[in-house]
Length: 477
Image (cartoon, rainbow, N blue to C red; front, side, top):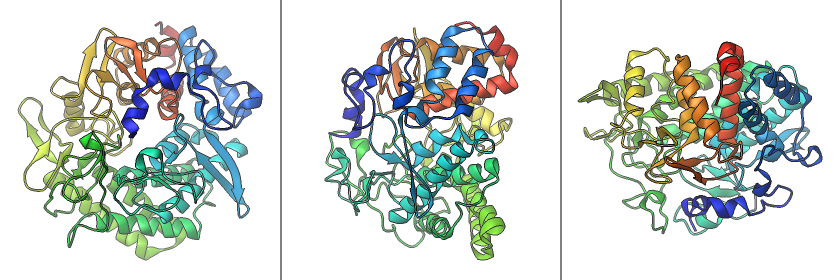
């Protein structure tokens, strides 16, 4: 069974118990979806105070309840804190899948970064993820997901993949953004907590490996060491041409096998991830210079970031007949491009959320307008709402994540309010974010336990509480 088949069974997932020590996803329904205090995987008085504070910020009971469920969901249900060699170590699952995705786990912890300076327990938890990430990168920088224990076998659907699978790897889909998210969390944690302790020799080695992997996937001399094929009915679960993907002409861009949706790239030069890689290299350069005192790594990373940005400017911008100049989604270096957007991040609409481009940049604004229009083949509108989906689930399915990125990149109270209304009215009464819902029927949804989307909802609510309190006070569903 591949990942898509597993995730499409929403009704089955809703009644299937999670793995040992977790909770039935059936418990995540009704007005209160949080586990009893004694069964929560992690508790923090700071988090509870944030929930209490938000209750006073809005009179909307549905908004209060959805925030109370979503904001602590990662901490309540998905973290496994421990220690290793006297330092924090944290394993994080996505929710209903017992594996640690580099991207998801980093994104899940992001909303808690502001708490790390005032709550030692939260700080230790996040530091544990940063340290765990570094070891996983050194295990295999081309893997996107890892098992709980080093000797565990891959996820069921990945057991027979034709690639260089290693023990401890759950799935080996090469996605540029996986490594970018590792650095984003580490850099963000350092800045938020003022704690550089996680930048030890292991993290230093991992940073070098990230730069090396990006270099390999520029494919200037050869195709590099990574290949991947899967015997699956869905073609987006495998790569063509011996597992190396469609041809590209080397031009400075980094090639990715898969998108952050875990779907195969059509053209491997994936533009949103290249913009993410450029910022990631800048962050590595800053850490190398300021904390690691490795001037050689800092110089290499800084120069590499400039090379990737130049390549994006030269090859990653296309002329759309209606929207003018916009960022392409994917290109191949031969003049071919894909004009679309996907719900996942990095994507076109989420570029400003990830701080890869300025929100007021005219090129980004034109690109965002394209992504949020019917000129994007994966933009859907129905009686339940409108938003971006993608090929991962199928036509007509809108991802709450994409609606959240829309709100998080908006300067319009009206647009943000409409996004909030859609989000709280499409949970099918669970008061949790899902992976997707059908545009005309929110009861047709996937993944009732998807911690990344829940965290994003918490992030949006806290941002509005800080920056647009009047919007929250006036909100009604």
